[in-house]
Image 1: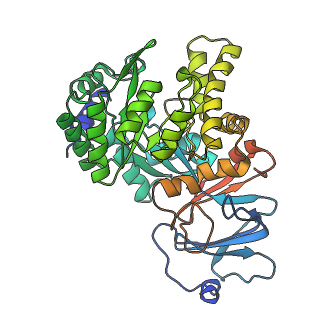
Image 2: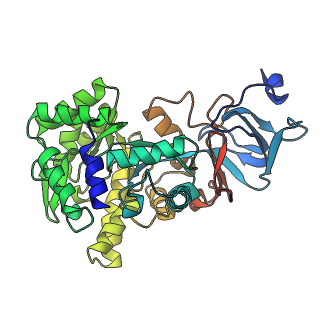
Image 3: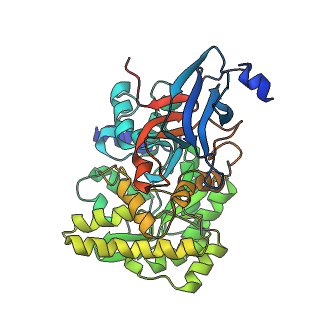
Length: 430
């Protein structure tokens, strides 16, 4: 298995009436016509809910929405009774990883096994779109290709492939046996550029291999107590090349210095809060806003990491609370928040605690919904197709078992996840 990973790594260069009458073409994404009926619909975080509503899906696209009472649906529509349930646009988890060993050799693994793993990690929690912020590019691209072919039900995957690290900054936690030694050697030899030209070459290679975003460790934990910063020249060159090629750049900052390097380089998304840095001052918050930087909180991760380090329950909560405070600061300043949990690195996949912690930071249920739907759509410049329940939008939909406006934990109470008009959770038995 390790040899396959290394081979993959080294291969990197390589009209309403017409709609309701059922007219229109179907796409390969979702050939069924679906009618979700009886639910309360949240068309977007800012639109009023529609009680006893319906969503009609045809050809992978939302054809119509409205009040269900008295509507006559097309004869070929498969109806899903959603009475007492709640509908939102599909969720995006903007920070995941396909790095666990169970994803190895994704091109050859049995489809049913991969489908079940996608359910367990992602789709059972409503994630119809994800951003993989670090993994072996060729392997994740193979997984994505099998999903996009329709062979495996799963979320849309954007991937960064392997990140760029500062010199001497390959994270210590990759060297605990999780990652094969030959891959660590490859990373240290090829993905720790010391000059701008070398960083540009890595970005070009990643994009040629299918990377959708670029990830930089602008501050990296080389040891549990030593954060190595990225050379600002290297960070700036990588960002400039990524932007020239139409890619967003994510950064793992770790501390204030890493965050400043990311900001000065023009990074688009901070992939974490940074509890080690303490309270952010007003000038930093203003600079983040000025640079239109999005923030992924990953608050549950801080409890997970503190527990791994042997902290007491109180210490773990205190560490997480620093991230909660940073999220509160940035949200109060009007900063854009993207939901993300770091699952795949974090092996506890349930996002419930993340929702609770975001609520503790002062985010309302609709602001959390924004971080899951409309905010990532805007960040990726696809608001015309994703992030809302409206005619003409992609039929990426979550059906919840209880009202998230009453309790944010209900965002994790998923009954159905639908992507491009296809039910991807629960997965139908063959």
